[in-house]
Every structure is written in structure tokens, then in C-alpha cells.
Length: 169
Image (cartoon, rainbow, N blue to C red; front, top):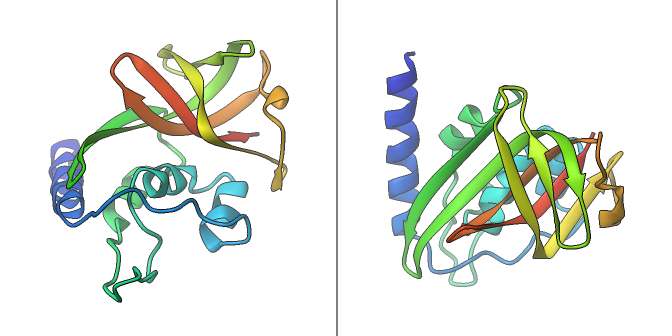
């Protein structure tokens, strides 16, 4: 499939998924399958999507209706993803989901900077809430330091990018 075809599928899925969202989904408990996948570093984008209002497959809302299952999005955001942004229109407004993989070049108490393999650099602020995972275990944010390889997912609000999930490799 061509890059254009993949982009069309991604936009279609996100447009359909964003139309049915009532609000941000509650953060998954540490023992959920999504958190386990994120701890493995394989699907950290899924957790970023979940934090921005998408749901885990098969999970039902309080009203009994099933939440959106962004399978196509997960397929497009696998191991080869270096960085990207997806804008979703939901009932509560527009949300921008940001993901990036790379090496930390600078870190302090306010945030950190990640440089991807293609040279793209982005400065992230620590979001609230923030989940940091290292070796399949919950970790403190002080493990994010220069030279460490990370996978980051979060949300953009204007010029500020807030990290919600950091997986340290």
C-alpha cells in the first residue's frame, strides 16, 4: 500500500473515531493489557491514543456502548515510527496527539528534548498525569536523562507538547 493510501486510511479512521468520543478516557490501571503493552515498548502509541480519548479494544463505557477501536492507527504507528502528530475532532474539541522515538539530548525539571534518527528534535514538557516505564516497571521521571533512548507519547496544546507516557529503552 502506498504512503498516500495509508494516510487516507489513518485520516478516515481518526475522523470516524473522533466523532464518537464523549471525553478523555480514564487512565488505564497499571495492570491493564494496554499498560502491559506499553511497558513492553511495543504499543506506546496506543497508550498515548488512549490518554487522548481513544479506548482499549473491547472495553465498554458506563452506558454499555463499546469504545472506538483504532486498529488501523496502531498498525501505522508500530516500531518504524520515528515521530508524528494526529489531529482528532471530538465532542470536546480538537486534540493533537504527538508521538516520538529517539534519544534524549537534554533534560531538566521542566522537561526534556528528544532527537529522532532522522534529525527531528522536539522539546517535551512533563504532562500531568505522567507515566514513566523502564524495564516493564513503573519508574520515576529522573530516569529520563541525556543519552537515554525513549519512546514518548502525549498531547500538543498550542506550542507546548506535554508527555503523558515515556517508555525508556
